[in-house]
Length: 280
Image 1 (tube, rainbow, N blue to C red):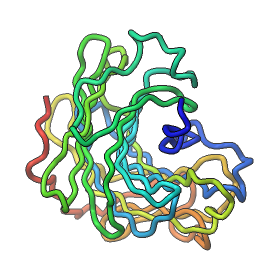
Image 2 (image 1 turned 90 degrees about the vertical axis):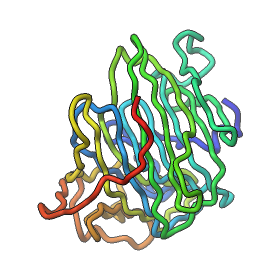
Image 3 (image 1 turned 120 degrees about the horizontal axis):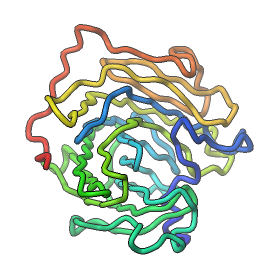
């Protein structure tokens, strides 16, 4: 994989069951995650509001068992939207047989496409977009099973753009499975020691899953996890009806203990947004 593509890919996969090396202590902020318990679905909707960012940060709004989708601030301060889908568990993208690779079925004219490695392999897409702190952005992923492959479509909604953008559709081998294993995360991928002094925090909320059969279901519970970096300046909790994650700097773990679950209030009155993209 080229050095250009490496700049866009987190070095370690930020899901609870893999984790980062403990040698990241005092080198990178600890990666923090929210795991959402929900069944197999054909669509997953979530929103993210970044409260504080820093160069080299990935705010993943939608993660699932075959990919992830969110926004990044690169090491040079440039911002973008990124959507990635895996096709293998090995690390060299060139060693994946052509017929087993992620296939591109659709892309927006402003979207760039590439392949990645080093954390598994797959296809990824980039949309240059100067997202802003304090603004809420919508993300939606849909799935459509086609034989032993599943077609995953990523949609991005920004208030500045006034409408949904169908960024990309990737097809990958799944054995005929839809969406599952839902999560969000915040990751520091700059990892230059100085990055550990920068606080990164975001709110995630108004999450919904569309089951294979039945109506949309609100996601009201999340489990707080982190990678194997042993530092303790991390936090998570509930604020204004949304889950939040914090890592780095002078952060104190004062709200939710690591590996504990959080539950939104029973009287939560969230509404599924109108005008969502069509689910095939």
